[in-house]
Image 1 (cartoon, rainbow, N blue to C red):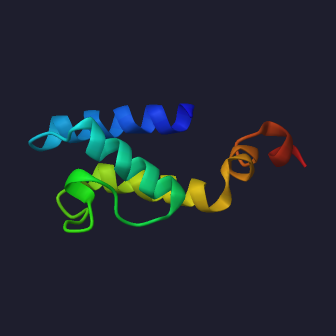
Image 2 (tube, helix red, strand yellow):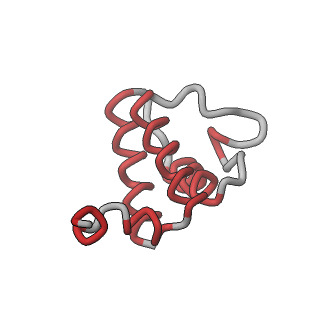
Length: 87
């Protein structure tokens, strides 16, 4: 839930600083669609639209969320622990 909320606000912040702004419904649905690997979201990233209007930084964020969603969160978190890399 923390990942979803923080990514939603980060996506809205990135897009608000780079383009005309993204509403929270579109940002939340884009994050949920990326984590769940389901494709279209709601609003500006819905079935009648696409992700092309988002800035590159937002696309990188959503791409990393797709990887986290596909691999699940715990294996990705394990990559960032010290004990894994000490061996």
